[in-house]
Length: 222
Image 1 (cartoon, one colour):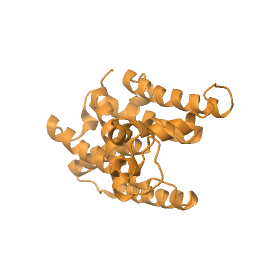
Image 2 (image 1 turned 120 degrees about the vertical axis):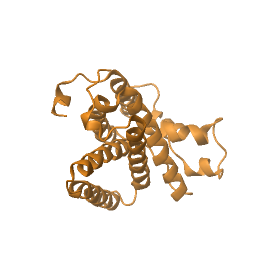
Image 3 (image 1 turned 90 degrees about the vertical axis):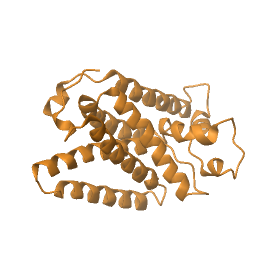
Image 4 (image 1 turned 30 degrees about the horizontal axis):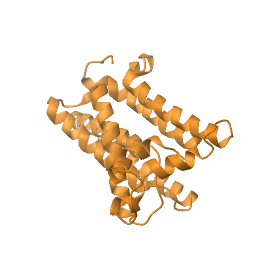
């Protein structure tokens, strides 16, 4: 996988991340008074954020299908440039690596399914919580898929699974620290849901292809 850094960025991943960047730049420009839409971020959160109250029917949706569509749209809305940058860095770094192994279609499916799974776990555990925004559920889905491939590789080679447990422990610790640092305003449920979805999708991918590990697949250009 060392060749990943020398491969061109897959088009599907590039356009996906570019969409996140454009939306965030537009919202930031609005906040800075550089756009006629002065309340763009507020509107993005209201109409695109993940609101448990809309999902559970506590509030009337603002448009048809909002309780379902927001499970996807929330992944395209961020709270600021730093939030967006953190998620896009993960998506680019891990997504590029995964695309070389599983292809663009699987990576796109992984993004959307992980975002939905993370959103579902968030609303299930937060019936009256604040709205959640960001692609971190999808980003953790990328982590989950990648770690499952590594898990299979270690098992196949008879190596200790310590690196997998260390990573999971580090992620748990990081979420605890961030949850405390943000005074509880961290959608750790979305992170967990996305990671679980990514791990499960990894098992489906391996079984569907009859591969022992994705790391031995041929590099693909997309």
